[in-house]
Each structure stands twice: as structure tokens, then as C-alpha cells.
Image 1 (cartoon, each protein chain N blue to C red):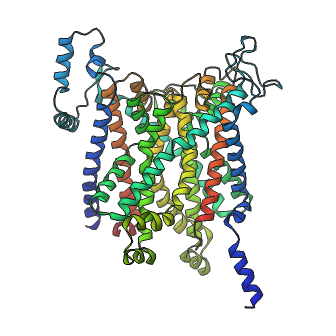
Image 2 (cartoon, each protein chain N blue to C red; image 1 turned 90 degrees about the vertical axis):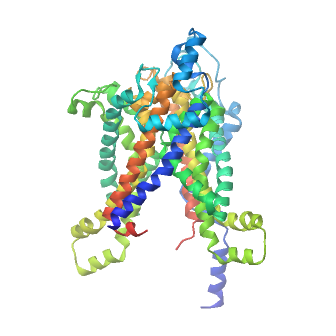
Image 3 (cartoon, one colour; image 1 turned 180 degrees about the vertical axis):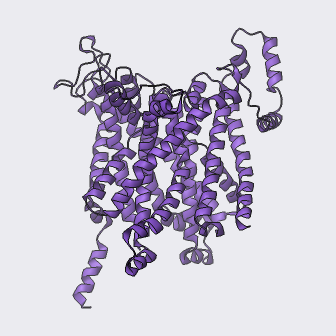
Length: 287
Length: 313
């Protein structure tokens, strides 16, 4: 092998992961979708053509037109504006329903994975017990305890969801502990805290991040389902599930009311899963 | 012998799990807002009546005694009386269970019919446009909330085209198949999206395996290879996946029953929550947990029966 090819290979290896990612169409499309969704979520007022709560009894249940691309609802409110304003709530769901579950789950998972012993045994049985409940059944049971509403919904999803992060982190930490660098840390006399959080976790976190992306998509699906069932966001708040539920009674006469918010859910969910798939391809070491 | 031992160990592990399940349900229900005695007797009941109800339900006992009462009553099949239905919770659940069971099995059959052939087509055409098209459609399907799939089917196939009834539940088997087709299809579309993806990769894995390459080199026909090796291995992973997806299928059933007004356990659960019918919530949550763990157990047993390697680990 000549020197030229060696340096070329090294250069290829040095290429940043971002550059590789940008060549994957799925990842790029996902990133664009989520980027645009985030813009709509941060500044809905800039993009929405009308006030989402402006009631107009002269324009009730109008089909899609140039003036109202998504039509109007039973109170004459502009559907497009309501779908756009809902981005704020639904994108917030992706974050707030997952972040606390992830932080707590990673923390617990790292600890039980590192120390094992009796705490790990109890943790194992707790995981078994929680995955024995269908996810939605347990979440709505917790919502029943706390009462319907967005904040309670976030609490309910987090209370159930952390287990999945903890299980994943535990398995990864245990796998990482088989490596020489972990034993080296022990030999060097590093504190447990330093070994767990500075050495093991950074190496164990990759699958958790990938799962987080999928979980954000799931959080939007779950949040809108709870909104639809009347247990999440409450009307008149514009939220995709609530909007679909509002349109349900007029589904044969004003189909656009339920159809349009659903398309927003599908596109956003797709965006998160495409990013998740892209990251999984990118971060998982190829064998 | 080894297999009996395995079953025994597996059952033994279920005891602590179920103990924790009972603890979770007990704690959840204790935290429900409102006084259960008022929920049973109504706002205008006298203090003496309320006190009598509290005594009868053991609500004045210490927590641990209450927990013991809950466990021993449950083990004897007594889940209390539903406030909403004015009947024993076990009776109410037994009445609704066949509907949900039928719907779930129906959905399993439909999702296998959808995912199975498509996974084979995608795997055998790996990398070309057929594969890409099938995967894209299922990727979109995975991003659709169950209630939305249900509403679309309901609007177009039931309300517009009138091919199917918009709700309810038939009397005889075939009428029931027709009535529950759309709800089952809703759950199946969602479940098949989960199965398809994994089934495709497991088929590809088997196709690439050395023993399959060897069979090819030996000159065995494609049909024999697919039937003997690929199908058998694909079946193991599909059954495992279906078993593990039972929780999300139940979640899907809960939403679907609400969309299509199917009188099953899922819809009952929501009614119980809005009515704050705490004995019913408790009973239904427990029933769902029991169902899921029985399916998990059957999956494990089936897997160890099909794949002897599993028994060793």
C-alpha cells in the first residue's frame, strides 16, 4: 500500500459524522421536518394566517379554499391557524414527556448496572411488573389519579416511561464494564462516581439517544391519543388530538377538520423516526 | 425434563412480579382523588351510612391490613362492586372480555396476513424499489396514531362507502367478523408495521446465513430453502414479536374500541375513569396485566419449544 492511499484512508476516516449524515436522504429529510416544526412551534404567530381562537359565525365549516387552506371549524375558526398553533403544544410534548423520564431512567439504570446486587434484583422485578401493564392502560390509570390535563399527562408518561430508559442504560453499562478501560479506572483508584459518569455513561449513552428520538415520536402519538380521549390537553386549546376529536362529530360533512391535524401528526412523527433511524445507522459501530 | 424445569422456573419468577403488580395497582387506587364511600353511596348519604361503607370496605383499617384484604380478596376472585355498572367487577369484566379477546385475535390474524407476505416480498427484493416502497408505507403507518387510522377507515369504508357498519358488535360469528373488521384492521395496520420491519430483517439474516448458502450450493430448490429454513426461523421471530407486542396491541385496542364504540374492556376502562369507578379501574388494570403476562409466558414456552437453543439460556 502506497503512502498516498494510506493518507487518503485516514482522511476518509477523519470525515466528521455530520458529513456522513448529510449524505443520507432519510436523515436530511427528518432534520428538515423537525427544523421546520420547531420554527412553527416557537413562533406560530408569524406563520398562522389568522388568530386561532377567532370565532366567526358567518364562516362555519367552510371547506378548504384559498382564504382558508384547511377550511374552518364548527365555530368558524381557521383550521390551518389552529393546526399551526398546536405545533407549540405537540412539539412541547416530544420534549416534556421524555426528558424527565430519560434523565431519571439513565441515572437509575447506570447505578443499578454498576452496583448490581440487591437493588438490581428489585429493579429487575419492577421492570417486569411495569412492562406487564399495557403502556396506555398504566398511563391513563395515572392520569385518572392526577386528573386530566397536559401537566398531569407529562407526569403520567414520565412515571411509566423512565423504566424503559433505565433498562436500556443498565444493559449498556453492564456491557461497557466488560471493557479494559473500565477495569483500568478501578485500578487507577478513581471514585465510583467518576467511573460511572465520566467513563461508562458517555460510552453507554448512544443507544439511549437513538431510543430518545423514537420516544419523542411516540410521545407525540401518545399525547395526541390522550388529547383525543379527553385525558390530555383540554379544549379550547389547539392540540392535534383535541382538534381531531372536535372534528369527529362532523366527519361526514366537514372531513377536513379531522384529516388535517392528523397529517401534521404523521409528518412530525415521521421526522423524528427518520432522525432516529439515521442516528442509529450512524452511531452503531458496523461489524 | 429440562423443559419442565424451565416452565417451573418461569412460573416462580412470576410470583414477585405479580406481587409488585398488586402493589402498584393498590397504591394507584389509594391515591385516586375523592372518597370512595361517597362515590358509592352518593353525595346525600348520611355520615352513619358512609361510616358503615368505610367499615365494610375496610377503609378504616391501616394500609397494610387494607393491602392484605386486597390481595386475599383478589385471590378469591372478589374484585369488589362496580359503582358504574352496579354489579360485581368480575361479572362486568367477564361480560366484556370475549369482545376484546375476539378483537385482539382477529387483529393478530389480520396483521400476520398483511405483514407476512409483504415482509417476504421486501426481503427477497432487498434494496430495489419494491423493498423501498413497502418500507416507506409501513414507516408512515408507524407514525399514525391508532385513533387516526380508525377514523379514516370509519369515514371512508363505513360512512361513505357503507361497506361496514359504523359501530357495534354482531351476534353470530360471521356477523361479528363483519362488524369488527374495521376495528381489527385498525389494530392490525398498526401492529403489522411493527412486525413487518423486524420480520424483514430476520428473513434477510436467515437468507445470508451460512447454512442457507450451503443449501443453495448443494442445489436445493428455492422452495425447499424458503419453506424449511427461512419460514421456520421467521416464524420464531414473528411469534416472539407478536407476544412482546401484546401490550401495545392492548393499548391500541383500548383506543380502537373507543373510536368504533365496541363494547369491550378498553372502552369500559375509559368509562370507568370518567366515572371515577375505582373498583372497576382496579379490576380492569389487573385483568390487563394478567392477560399480558399470560401471553408473555405462552410466548416464552412457544419459543423454547420451537427453538431448543432458548432453553439453555
